[in-house]
Structures are given as C-alpha cells and as structure tokens.
Image 1 (tube, protein in one colour):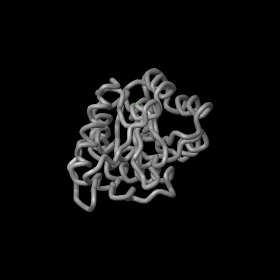
Image 2 (cartoon, helix red, strand yellow):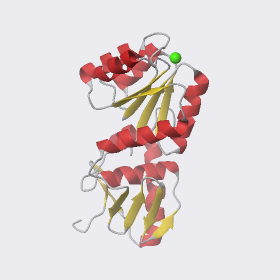
Image 3 (cartoon, protein in one colour):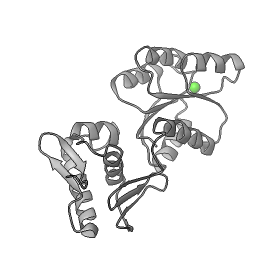
Length: 227
Ligand code: CA
C-alpha cells in the first residue's frame, strides 16, 4: 500500500498509460518525461516509489538512481527498461534499485510488482486497517463504519487511510498534503479542510459521533477509546 509514485519515462504514451492505471488503482501519481527534471522532482518531493526508465533525455536513469541513493535509501525504485541485458539488471540492482522490469511489459504485472514492493514497507500492516467502528480495505479501497459501506471520494479515502496508518498520533495538514496529495491537484491547505469536513460528516452520519479529532496546533487523529 502506497501513497505517492513518480513515473519517469520519455515515451509519453507509455508514461501516461502507466500513470493512469496506477491512479485508478488508488495511488497518487506524478509523471516526468525528462531525466534532469526527474532528478529535481525526486530531490524535492517525497515519493514512496519511483518507476524509472533508463534511456532518458537530459540524464540517464542509472545516474538518477545513483544520485538518489546517495541521500535516500527508503524510496523504492523499479527500473522499467528496454535494456534487458543481465549486466544492466545487475548494475541497476547494485545501484540500489528494488526491482527491474524489461520492456515490453504488461501493466498488470507492473501493478502487481508495485503492490508487492510497497507492501514490504508496511509488512506489519494488514490489508484492512481498523480502529473501533471504522474499517478501510486498502485493496478494494472501500471504507466501512459499523460494517456499513460508506461512499467516499478519492481524497477522503486517502485521508482516512493515512490517519488509520498513523493511529495514536495527530497528523498535521502539512503531512497530509505531502502524503495524500499529488503535486498537481488541490495543492492548497484549504482543500484539506474541505475534504476533511466532508469525510467527518459522512462518518458521523453512520456512527453518530465525530470519529476524527482536530487537536489545535497538532493536527487530526482518529478518535480512540482512550481519547
Ligand atoms: Ca526511454
């Protein structure tokens, strides 16, 4: 389960198709068609996983990977390349890639590999996140309150999921922005308040109480028994 992805691929059609299928699978996705620009994104934004082509204008994917790994061991990198030689794979994995896929490829396989890579990060977590009367299925992307399915928007699901992943501590607006939002859409803090209040209203309609607390100066958290 993951939140933010960057797809670096100069063949726009492939890039956009990959981005769309991952977006539909519930990820926040940024795209980039140029190597140098990609490095800028990578060094300034906070991605959970990067799908990285090797032959790129501006800067070679392998160089980008090496640069990234100098300061960041955490972000997963999946190389997606037409270079199918064993030597290329070995070089990529040695440079710190977490997986390597050769072109041509099937979108479904790419998705499956991304799912498995990102789940490794949350090994201890279940497919279903739960707290009290609230449950979120991270595969089906469905939310339940008292076993009643609630219809939520993409952003509301993202917020609920992130709060459930961070039970027990308040999450600030800035942190939500960083993990639930992509770089292009709704990137102003007022947007969070709008989505948040809509999410709280929908939960309250079923539960009869406000399941999300707003701790002034600290952030939002899911209400637990101890609260
Ligand atoms: Ca390429």
